[in-house]
Length: 118
Image 1 (tube, helix red, strand yellow):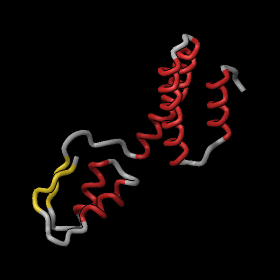
Image 2: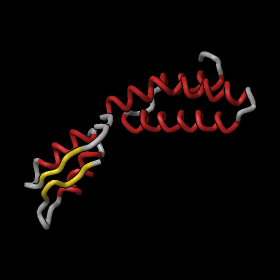
Image 3: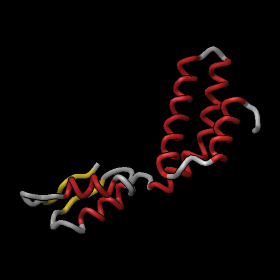
């Protein structure tokens, strides 16, 4: 959460912050936006992950989520399985949004879903 301490009437801070936040963690986006204004804002809470951190998290957790989803489905717990599969899709989209899909990542996804190494 970002809160204003002092803002100018015609501040462009929010636009600059949102633009920077597309590619940076919240704390870095705040620093970037403050460089373009005389406003004073503060960040409260978690600073967020940058693109590199988010990609590493996604790559490290995709297979884990798929396998847990398969276990939940096999245990006749479709709601839990769906939650895990949705998590897998979310992290896969994050990884794909920051770099082109490679044959290795496709093979990893297929292996995770089928249980077969390709």
